[in-house]
Image 1 (cartoon, helix red, strand yellow):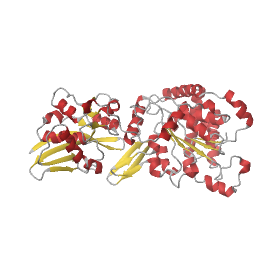
Image 2 (cartoon, one colour):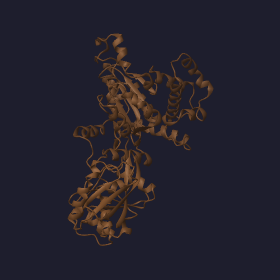
Image 3 (cartoon, helix red, strand yellow):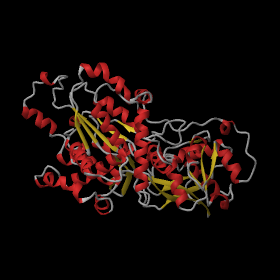
Image 4 (tube, one colour):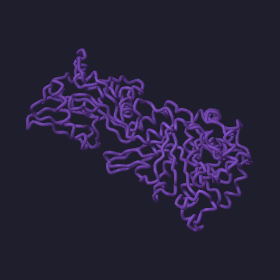
Length: 519
């Protein structure tokens, strides 16, 4: 019995696990038998692999072929196992030296013509291969730039099965038109509207917002410390305009954060074409009709996909018309707001997706959405029920709250001359973040919003005299224990923005007013 082995990677969320792909040729009914919990797309590899091998000028073994994916109890999905299966089958048929492929990790889909096509999730797959000790990974040409982001791993990009076999046989590459063809990466799951929206955001500037000086200041504090925001106000007051300009105040992602964000978008298939590394903070704005799975992620055990919360990792999650979201949908964000990750458990599989984002909520004060407060016909009880859709535990996790008012004619006429540009404000944000980074240099955190409550109280507690101003709000129940931590975090951000050594009573009072929405 001939036996050959190579390796591939199975993904669960953004975590990967090495899979041994073994092929054995035995006597029996001719055909390919695939074992090891493959999904439908992987089961269809039988036909793709056979056609690709024959089209590449190789012989298909006219005997019974068994391909095992180990560990057998681990669910596997997708077409990224194709080239590993094809090479293992040819190795078992003694068409390849088995020692040439045993130590390689192979990731790619096969076309019927033998061309190797790119797949989603290559970056986390190569990271998993590197963590397992692999030193060489085979990928499609369309995935080469993404795979090359991982250091200390040799990435071999090939365009066809014929070219891969020549390399494994230590032969010169063939003159193969399939191999020479330019193979593009998998198409991102976006539509024309999303692409136009992204292009439009690239031209946005904070100076475009007339009026709402308070709202612009809150955005600056949020960007400097990574704090969550809730804007409430009548339609047309500028809530959406402000939210869309928050990304323009954020600095570029650091290398580690950029790899995290890119890995999530690679798994989701939303990695922008021609951009192997995402260097700007992402901006996600799901519609208020989005389901809980669309917001935090979901799917079957064999295909768990990230939601908008994870796609906004290290960036902005904008939830416009917050009270219009379905019951319980927004409350599903409470865990990621606290833990910075989403855990999706299914029978036989658990996936973890990073989800450390800045949430920006926007809401109208009533369901009638009258453009002027005096035109509202809603009864007080109707307004209370409408705003009660934003639960107390959710709002308790929001650091900055503000009730925006209608913009006056004077502001519309003159405020544009006084409004600062995004470039000017972003410089102050960067300076404040540098001060925060130096203070947190010996910790794993980089923004004030990331500091856990216990460390905030032990290592970064303001003077007792400054905290005394919070005794009354704590005593009368206006401020919760969680709210206390959030007030202190905002006070540190205010301190960093003005360059002081530590929070005083002034910064604590300002932070409390921002938390209560009294500014």
